[in-house]
Length: 430
Image (cartoon, rainbow, N blue to C red; front, side, top):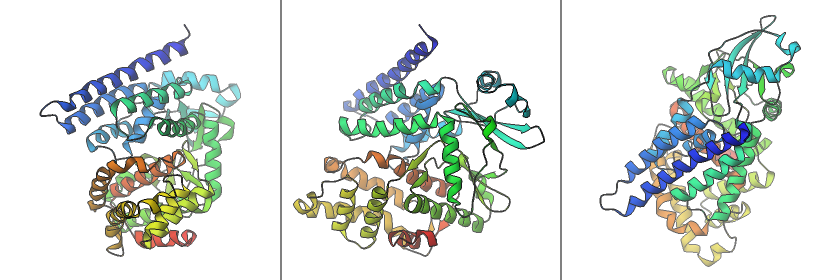
């Protein structure tokens, strides 16, 4: 048996085992004294241990789930969030074999030194500082050897895990469509040639207030990506900065998110603190371009229509925008206007009231998430009236992750004014 097949079988067994354990815990839901919080805490710990050890697409999927803190049980996401914070690097000796396969003598001759201790580790690879001949400081992103061949199997096994845990109220066919979108994005992330192309596409946007690295083409390929090093403070260290600095960063992040989605149709879809930094001159450094989502015009138009209608309290317009996105049946509003009006009104008030209350929205204000979670749980009885939109999975992931990023740096942003600008098509003026 080849090493690749042996590794895939091992990964499948480990994920299968986590699924069976989740299913076993879930079977106890009918017993007296069932503790829902303990169930999700135990499942989260189990998934953290399993996915963290597997790395690759399995670990990445856990990180994606962790960014839905506004929808998933907090006991689960608290554990999965550790997959971002506590990712352990591998010894450089293991990663050097990847470099030796990727680089020939001419490439090695360009490199003066490589730090053997990784500066960062993630699901797909890890990053080492290095210096080129001539003194240029760079970072080398090295892909873990086994991840490229594991995406399909890991996503398939995740599907089984989701079905067994009954975490998402989605029918099988729609779940398959969502997982197909996830698989496509993860497959792109394992090819650093795609990431280099993404980086160049994002650089071409020239987003104001952002600083993106320059790749070193002669040293980059499918399994290795070399970029200039940008010296910047991690955003999760910004709590010690003055409020004005945090607010400037927050406003830049929101404004450029709007421009990416609605003006350019090109979205950096991995918004966790490790992928952003603050330079000494106040610019936001952006890293990691493996997960870039192309947003089609029809999707951007549909989202803008939903936003504009919601701000105008036009519930039929909200429904029409959701119908454009394939989320609802366009004729359903006429059949059940009271049901849909009630749903849209309640979600609008849960999300918008606090945002509209003052000139600046303080992201440390937690009532929005509490109210949204309440409404989402209350509306589970209506889930068959709505369909997931697979093409929006990573857009929604970005919105959720950006909220928690802004909350983490305690930013205050003129969010309602910015939403009005987006609804009116004025995001380029932000």
